[in-house]
Length: 327
Image 1: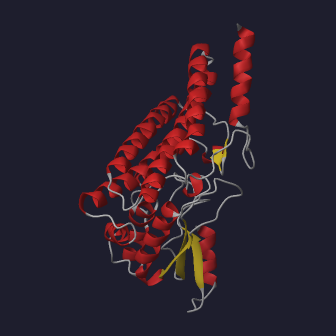
Image 2 (image 1 turned 45 degrees about the vertical axis):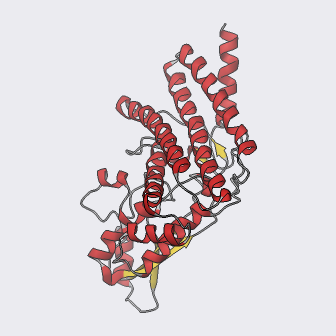
Image 3 (image 1 turned 30 degrees about the vertical axis):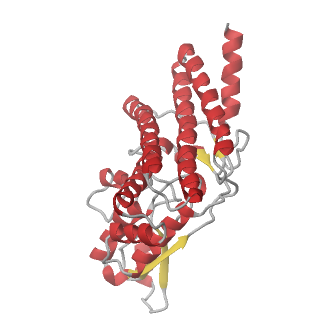
């Protein structure tokens, strides 16, 4: 912040000088603070938003981030409630600095998953672009316009799809991290899963475990909503329902790994055996999805470890061997 404001004072504003700023601190991780420099200084700002995030599936499953970017993510409310925590607050408090939004509509990351259907990426990009043109609109108003005009849903189905998308944001933050950022966010990216480091304090670790359970429960609710919606065609139905199952099965794998990491820390052999069985079953169910749903994205793999620390599956195999040796 100090460096930004110092440069801000040294460089005179100009109509052709517009500064691009990510909406969050650091990379596009849920749990990172909203950018501290948005709305500061005297130069025009254009905001960078990623719509297919490499840390969150890259469009392989529902992950509606437009609501959080525009109106504020739930985790930001507990961080710095007195600061600007959303694009809504930015455009209302410093409208003279707002110059628009640009998106990574696709892209991001170095590998998979590779999607066959752009629905979840398009939804984020479309809402961000339409709202950017007129920030006086509510995000919900723009969202419902997309659903009626692009997906051709009506009545209660629009509300069900809205609930599905908002739940996806809640499920992702709890399954990948927590609402208090108790985990290092770099433990999984692209199509790979690393070994998560347990939270240092007991309260944070209990919250971490609890929110992994909450995430899986939310994914199950998401699937129920997807199944009850009257989709305009079988292809859309197959993709939406299948991608929701993709989210559930992947986040069941995430949960088992976080519980295994906790059991290892506690040296609890009984829990290690239990969660290795859950881990194996979760991967089995995940690998069965392409046989049931034709348009799914490519799957996460056990051996991918680029730009990650310890590979999760290698660690599980080590624990499996230790348990066998211990018997």
